[in-house]
Image 1 (cartoon, rainbow, N blue to C red):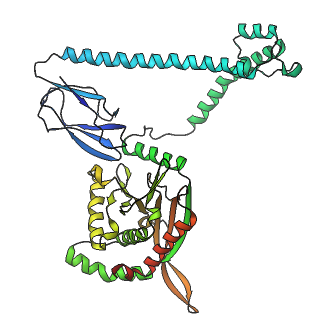
Image 2: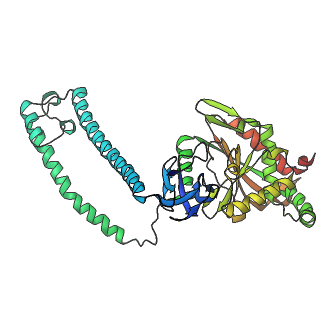
Image 3: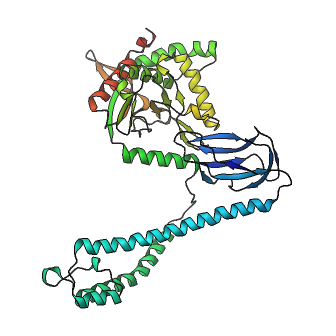
Length: 416
């Protein structure tokens, strides 16, 4: 009998969600057959069987999140007794139940120990009669305020605390009824647990905002020259290479070049180590059915705009089809996110850990400006840089952002 376990498919993977079983109980399985699909770190991956035989029993259903190395199913011989599997499963269930009971016992013991420590540490002053009464009425004297000499707890204090507690308990059902009435006034369409990609996004964003102090820098670039360059190239490129180059492609190249000149932002903080990367691997935020994913364009600073456009298109299509590979969403060193296509003029993005910075790009818009004492209509784009303030200060971030603005306003530099 062989155990099918949840594999560890990435260095940071702690659990995976079963998306789909490709085999059902009783099916014949050959080594190398796709056994199931697992969602981890926003990517769905196919897992092949290491063994040949028959799928005797499935322990984890589709949609269930399972820790790494936990048994998911069993593969055995066709005539192998199912009872042996049930016995093994029962042992696992009993073990888990015993672990839960043991945890409850430990929790209760810790609570008792905490109360005992409180009494010893604070050296609570209490009269013998009050102490006896508190024991009889099951009152935690550490919570009682003494009104006797030097804050000494008296019999009167114990009785008052007990009465106040009873009144508080009697008011609780009233509060619950009021809460229920208030809740009834709000119609709920759906309620669902966070799972899969959305759960991973929630966890990573919560981690980012709670553990990374963000510094946010804003700038505006004149995009008139960038628009002219794209307009002069887009039809020729489409006709010859069947590729539609976008402003995102230009901006990815611009960011990558600016990063290669300001590598302090191409970095991460691991424990107490400030790590600056040589490779400039641009992550591009993509909206998919399951939520936001960030595939990586490796060594983006050394690629031409045409190569970036082709690679970005492939990654976006696979991301929206849920077919990204694990290595295509790893090892990014910086992320760019663009909401301009939705009419968003500016926004602040949350850093994508373990990276140290992210650039948020808004829509291109028109505005009138004074140039050589004349009012002219130009196009502009808002840029917002979020940095990890533990390792990147305002000056470093400003230098990078200034360079991005220069390249947007003079895009011909990209071809020199």
